[in-house]
Length: 102
Image (cartoon, rainbow, N blue to C red; front, side, top):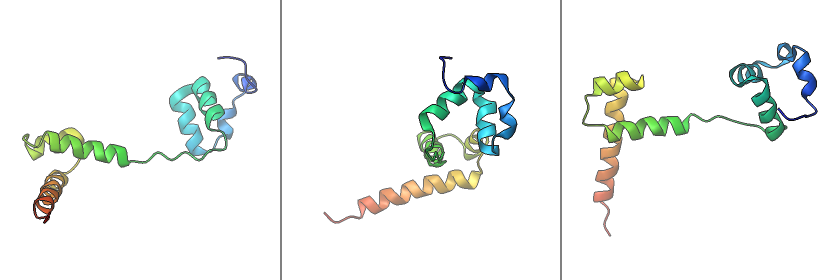
């Protein structure tokens, strides 16, 4: 790690003073990456949205809809009804597009 104004953190147990969310990040990435993140995002609110993951799950379901709902649900850790609902939503969107008068 290059010298920074946070080098002193190596010599103390500052993790005990971190709020829970920051403590979890520190425990996952370690001190060097934590400091790098802090230096880059200091005073910035960072929100980790689940939307990209949800969209990724839906995309995977639609790409693999020929597999059984039970297999998909198990591999994605979602319910079978979620699999059926996702496929049904896509089919409904296609129907709506086909019904448009152009």
